[in-house]
Amino acid sequence: MVALQKISFTAVLTHLLCRPWSATTALVSLRTSALVHLYSCALILLCTCALFSEVKVTPVASAFLGGGQYFLENNNSFGGNIDLYLCPVVNFSKDTALLPMYIGSYRGTKDVRELVGGGTITQEVQNHNVNLKFVTKFSETLKFGARAGYKLEYLKETKDERWAKGLFDYSRPVIGVEFEKIFGGNSLKAGLDYSIMTYPNYQSLISKDAFKISLDTTTYRELSTNAGKNVLDTSNISFALSWLRAISESSHWRISNDFIYKNFMDQKVVKDDGSFSDALRTDMLNTLGGSYNLSFSRLRMSIADSIRFHYSNQNSYDAKRTKYIPSHYNFIENLFIPSLTFYLGEFEPYTALSLFTEFSNRFYLERLAQNSSGEYLSEKTHQSTQTAGISLNYPLFKGLSAKLTSSYRTTSSNMKYEGNYKYNYSVFNYFLGINWEL
Image (cartoon, rainbow, N blue to C red; front, side, top):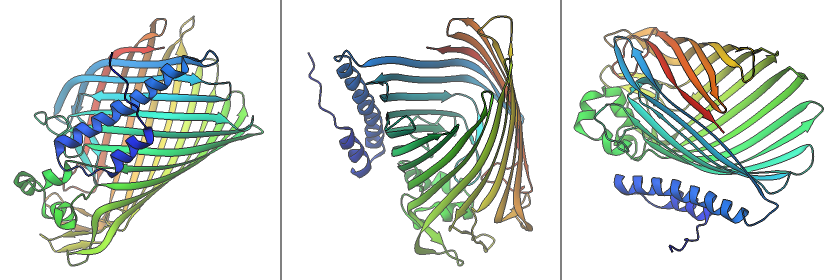
């Protein structure tokens, strides 16, 4: 019989944050081991809890398995999508619970994602997220929660790229606390998180000759090892505050503000002559949002709007054109999302038909637009995105349903130079699969 090794969750996090990672193979091994250790902690806790009769374990799970196509301009790709959620809720009492969670997904079709500073085409993406969350009630109106977790994301930019070798693969350990105060139909929540994002492959790949050729002078100078060794690694502090107000049994509104401070641990600030100063890059992202939800017996309506402001002290210097642009990453963005969900059929569970649209407008405060040949214009860069989507969830058996989703997104910008990032594109996708809930 194999003896169980005693595992300290704090020791695991300390091991992840403090141990130097010298090789990519060791990195992947440690990162994967961390996920195993964290989930082993959860399993050990569940087994221990089972020894006590007053402890109740309620399994919660959902999964989606499907396939479909993604059309990006004149190209298309066919692939599968997988989503998995596992959470055996451990109730020690009616006021105290432990939630070990695993959230994983795989996307096997092309997409355009914003990674460093613009849209980048991806081929496949998978992520794994393990969390341990403890919640308790101090009173009927005051709740407290604490969590610790670890996330891995693997991303392929080309089909022949190997998993765990991607340029933008990252790991993210996180710890955090949250409070909730309930009073007179109101719910006030506040949360504080600390995390570290590490990109183990970025430095090793950026120095290869292939990347020197594929990147333009601006991007290479900004992200080369002259600016630091681990230029994308950050330590992050985030603070979230939200206020939920119930107007009636069928309607409520919510106001929230999310603030994130990013400290780039090894990326130096670009000066106006193209050299690097001793100062390190810092970013701040603040999102102010509001939403209103209204429910009827067969209809649910939602309207949400948010304003994001991104500030960075990082600048840009294009050595090829001897052009210096201060505050290159600063922008203001507005996102508006209305949606409708209809519940159809004669008997429960009903068929759910959802429609949504999304309108996004981003305005860079200092980034100059360029024409298709790369020459700078006098106007600042702006980008507009419109998305329309539909989903249909048709119940088959208890907990099992067929699901169809489809969306169309178009993005346009006065930035016509796309040597590194996508600013103008149209995409269409559809997916059909089976959804299961426990």
